[in-house]
Every structure is written in C-alpha cells, then in structure tokens.
Amino acid sequence: MTIAVKTLEPVGMLDGAAAHDLKNQVLDVMRQGADGVLLNLAGITYMNSSGIGALVSTFKAVRENDKQLYICGLTDQVRMIFELTKMDRVFNLYADVADFQSKVATAN
Image 1: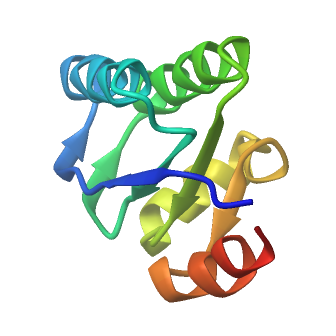
Image 2: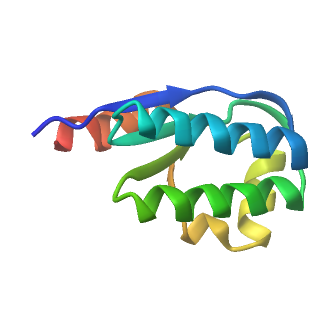
C-alpha cells in the first residue's frame, strides 16, 4: 500500500501569522487528496509558542481527517522548543527527508 505524502518546506519565522498560513497550506493539501503531509522545518530559523500551538492545532485537524502529519529537519532552536513543551513525544519526528523516507515511505 502506497500513501501519498506531500512535503511542505516553510522558511523563516514560524510565529502566529506564519503558523496560521502553514496550517491552511496543510489543510489545502489534505483537501487535494494527500494521505499525509511531511513538514520539513529545516528552513525555520525561529519558532515561538504561537508556532507550536498552531502545529498542535494542525495536528489535531489532520488526525480528525484520518490523515498523518510528519515533521523533519528540526533546527537546534526549534528542537529545543519541541523538547521543552514535550511536543517531541506527540509528533512523528524524523531527522530529515531521507530519514522519513527510509522509515515511513519504505514501510508502506
């Protein structure tokens, strides 16, 4: 069984407005028929609590549609936010796109 996973690669800051835009992009991809979304956050230089809140909201919306949300490419600053908020235990996190592909894409 093959799953259709679309990769999104936001860049810059992931704060309130940017996170809201990212959530809309994820939901648009879901509406277009993707089974899941891989967020490659390697280009995110800064994230605050609004960003993590929006990711949680996005995660819930994705799950309500029986889809999957994966995250990879955390920078040190973003990884620290995930660990401090214990969100590293909630999200499916991967080192990078290759790590995701080796563990998820080949498993399906």
